[in-house]
Amino acid sequence: MTMNLDYKNGLLYTSITLTYQGKSAVIEQVIVDTGAAQTLISADAVFDLGIYATPHDELTIMSGIGGMDYAFRKRIDRVTFGSFEVHSLPLDFGNLDEGFGINGIIGLDILVKGKFIIDLADMIILQK
Image (cartoon, rainbow, N blue to C red; front, side):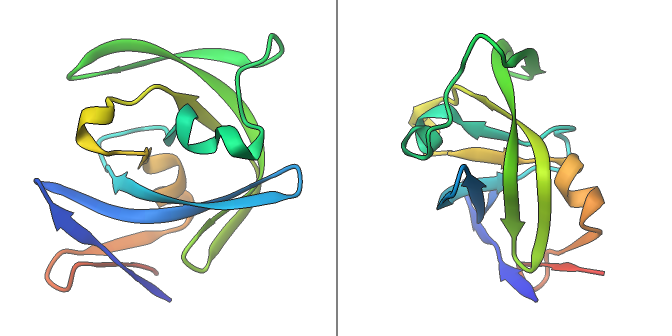
């Protein structure tokens, strides 16, 4: 199965589906980032799923060109990206700059595990 990529403002946008405690939601406006080691989802985008920081969550430090910030890590029941599905995956959740309209970053943790190929000529992502 292939998924379309939307190239805008120099970024590759797609969507991902998260399932947590029996609730599922499609998270739109997620960018594919081969420079990110770990997937990061906006905490605001998943609050309705019941995903929020608790004292039991692991805190992580996100670092990148924009500087450093904190996120919380939570094990998600199911992550679906196209036809790729993985269960009990730890994901990071934090604050993303709302000015860019980004709800998350799909990093190498999912891209490598799913053996994804990014086809920039046709603006699609597919599994090998």
